[in-house]
Image 1 (cartoon, rainbow, N blue to C red):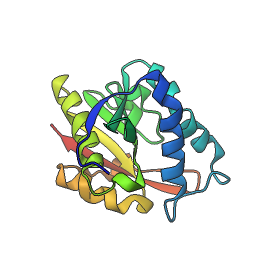
Image 2 (tube, rainbow, N blue to C red):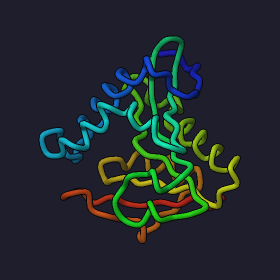
Image 3 (cartoon, rainbow, N blue to C red):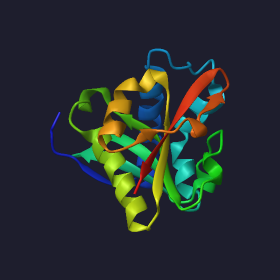
Amino acid sequence: MSRTFSIREARPDEFEALGHLMVAVYSSLQGFPSPEEQPRYYDMLANIGQLAGKPETKLLVAVAGNALIGGVVYFSDMAQYGSGGIATRETNASGFRLLAVAPDARGLGVGKALAAACIELGRSLGHGQVIIHSTSAMRIAWGIYESLGFKRSPDLDFMQEDLQVFGFRLKL
């Protein structure tokens, strides 16, 4: 896998492949609910391109040559964020969700670059914070988020069916 990659908005012809990547990544996480346990969640992942049509929402991808190696959904309006808990009521905030990196691209900085791109989008809009969520199955990502300045924010925590979801904030 090439160490050279770029981050940009996804094209419609990439939505299906990105959906497949997200389903594969999330379904392989140890301790994360399976597609059988949370079919609506996996349907959303498989059809990730539909989120690109929401107002104030961008679907960003990481590409190396012609290979799609990661993606994330950025929200400049938290009302579109679509999580449980209080996050959708936050103002002066951006958020991102559903960050996924292809297994053969892990360790190249793809996840950190996707997160940093979202932070820069929020900063460019003058937002005061960026909000994200994660689960225990994604502990490796927590280190990346913390290295970017995110702090745990228990007021943002919620349950997604039987799954505990943890909130984080980055003050800009």
